[in-house]
Image (cartoon, rainbow, N blue to C red; front, side):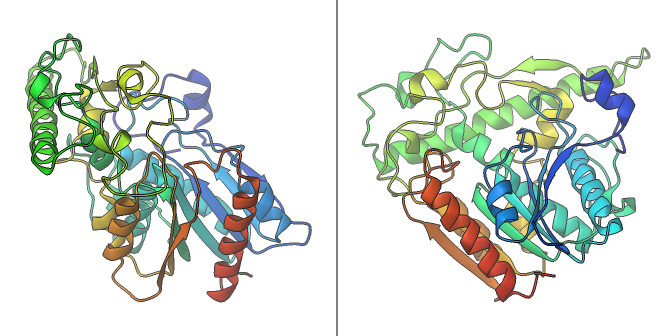
Length: 369
């Protein structure tokens, strides 16, 4: 596992091992095709598709990056290196075809990976740190799948950022004119409110980025080797679509994966509350992050399947459409999973349906070896 600048993961065991971990589920008969499911930080060792894919004759890998369970210092460019290490491992062991699935936050990552594997352009992180992906070993895959995925962490984070927060140190100080939880604003939300809301989200993101740049400039003047600092971001689960299902309409019910949006917005365990200066630029800054799914998938040239759940509370139909529309060739397919929630929790019939669809597509595209 190649490292970027400095120490970017807490676990000493992982750092010393220099490895990323995955779980391989083998088909009963030898398979020369491997399907890899990945996310930047979620633990996919027990992903719900691994067993069903192996049962259908395709070896399946649940892959973790070095940032498993903790994205507070995550660098997206290092995630690309980690995916490349896994793909290289599989190629060395004789897999002739490899299909890469980006699930949830993995959608942007897998597009970023294949873009850089086919035609590398990224020479540094947004903070100017290693790795240089133009010099990395990034074997291309043979097919891409975007599964219940959004187009990139910085994109979705900005869509979720709470613009009503007026003091970065006190999330309870709020602008009522920009508060989606104030019943005077909705739901339903007017087009005028949504327009102001989206502009204010972007403005808040850019204020944080400007502050991050100022802090990094201060650190650059130090001579003690300190190059990064942690910080806290409040209010990261505040997309109006969580409460108003007429926005980006689908079969979903109001709410989030973590419960009611009004409380999930401030819970410590929800999206991107804990980060660092350099991670912010790489992972969360919509103006700086290299992990822009549509931009990168537009640079890829392999068969691509985009699947989305019509009852998904997190990744909305427009997310799937933005990925699909950016694919630069005709070897693409957009498939709704009717009634599917984000992780198909409690939906075994839909898990089987998704596995059947994936394997059928793999066979149709000549990717089963």
